[in-house]
Length: 461
Ligand code: ACO
Image (cartoon, rainbow, N blue to C red):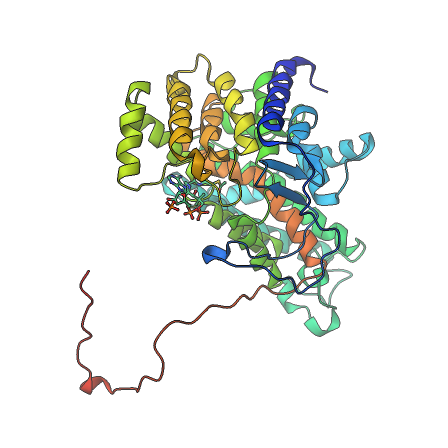
């Protein structure tokens, strides 16, 4: 499939070989075919070990450093597939035929056109906003736009249906995905309607991220180029320059690698919102919110600040010593699930080296990153701390001309596929998420009128 980028395919296959050699490739005996609820599990703080739901979308093998989407190994997908195909796989469950892929890719390309949303977005001070906040805003604007359109289109034959799903009499619909439909044209089966909203979001978030990048630099948003692939358009609509075949392929692989990752914080956030039967736009907006934090997707930007702060390979050792002595976290390292090398970092590392070659913005940073990896692995490897997906992704993005503030939005551009695939799956048999807390506060206190209260004594630190 990728003649011009055989070199990249070779790098991915070499990374795959190394992964299998170092962490094993035996099938995981923990995969269960039939889940019988209730399940028993041991739960730690931060819901560590808790099983939120059952899923067939993707699997993270933390002990062996494995990742698969719908049963396909991530290394194989990076080597042989493309992002459009991976979106189809995640959402629908199988690889598409040639005709299906063509139709699906055309649809995603069409949905990159969101001029009305971008016009509304341009009414806000985007250049002064946090880009992830702007992306959340845009996602909510997409919902409004769709609602209005649906109303206009559906008015003639759907007079009884309002513009907001909240106005549908709930008792007339069975529980499950029917509650959460977003587009109301009756001629379309419900599953297709949800699917269309998911595809709109996948492309819409990409167009918005590209537009936000441009608006932040005082440029107007660009329309997609029908000649370019999805990855090519993400780069083109961000920078205004047609990317090379190699740049397109690197972006494509980065998109694939970030598309889905088990019950991570942002996916869980998106599912929690979806489980209330809120619409998929609000759910994705919640996912974007959760991804923002530096302990999750926001780490990629922090890694670049850290590498620049370290400044030189010679400074790596003293920097690590001081940082660990102060018990600070090293950004881009560690993971709740992986206790071995993250397979995504295995692919991103050589791509970072490749995309950064000769680029002023990356000068010396890859060497610092590689030295930092060696130093952290030697000190913390025994604790299972290795580079995660965010460690090298910023260097890849920088090499592709994407600015630091746009790293986490670019992560969101990929992850919408996973969020929406898992929302679609979960809504088929929806149950609202509602865990418990263990109350450890005061009991049996007697209410004291305000006039009789003494100031509370503060605990000495
Ligand atoms: N640097 C130094 N020490 C670390 C790091 C790190 N990055 N990560 C974990 N540790 C240490 C902890 O100090 C702790 O040590 P201790 O047992 O001696 O106290 C031990 O490893 C376990 O740490 P936890 O906090 O229990 O790990 P948790 O699973 O809660 O956190 C997380 C995972 C948030 C990813 C953590 O590793 C971290 O903060 N990493 C840096 C931020 C980052 O890169 N985030 C992106 C993750 S990938 C993603 O979300 C897309």
